[in-house]
Image (cartoon, rainbow, N blue to C red; front, side, top):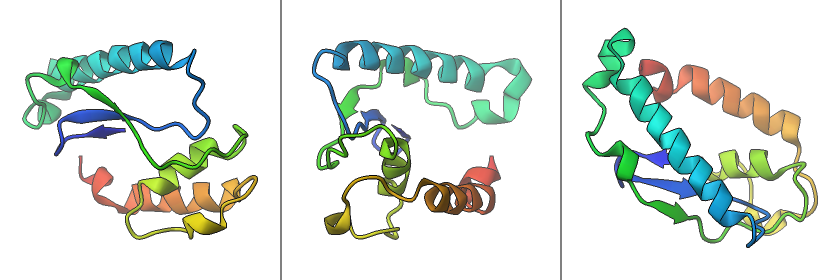
Length: 119
């Protein structure tokens, strides 16, 4: 997740493997660089106004408090729902695999009708 207010990227992982963290964070830095290139490209001129100059060097912070789901089946859906401040679910009730189809549908509707569509 890239947070433009905190000027940081967050590594959110519900099943972190200590041996994989450096590689994942290097990939995130590469992706941040590509996002910066995209947002500063003349082809996407309207985005350039909102692009910070130092996007490539923003720190990568590790998200805290994400429950270990012990499965990759629901980790992506969990991370997306975690970002919803309205609260899609009660974190105390998490066990096993979340209902991915419900979360994906709700997140798709939010993305289409939400502030992300303003860009």
